[in-house]
Length: 142
Image (cartoon, rainbow, N blue to C red; front, side):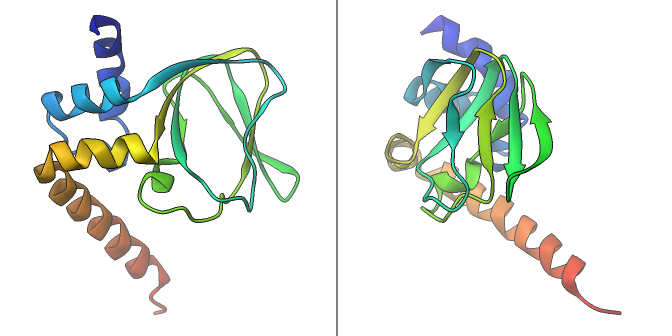
């Protein structure tokens, strides 16, 4: 699986995986699939449950919230990381603007990695606690 090692730098940039060791990132990469996506395909649909994380390797996509374009995603960017932890509804729709190549990690495969590497779950909990703390501080009214 040497080709999947090329994804490690991109995976390391995902906040959810920020504390993961290189060995942990290799396990995550091996649990992922490289998928070709045709232009115009909806990758995730706002309001529908999420089951996977996407890392863009090539191509671009539009992010739409309530049918309004709010962002464009390009190689190295990602979406859907919280779907690895829950099956909550997607907060936006993502549509391929061009033909794309994406790395897809499903929730079941990710949970298998956590079973194999229990220490990774602790690292992710610390990261999520930090994100929750930051969000809480932003919501405090002065």
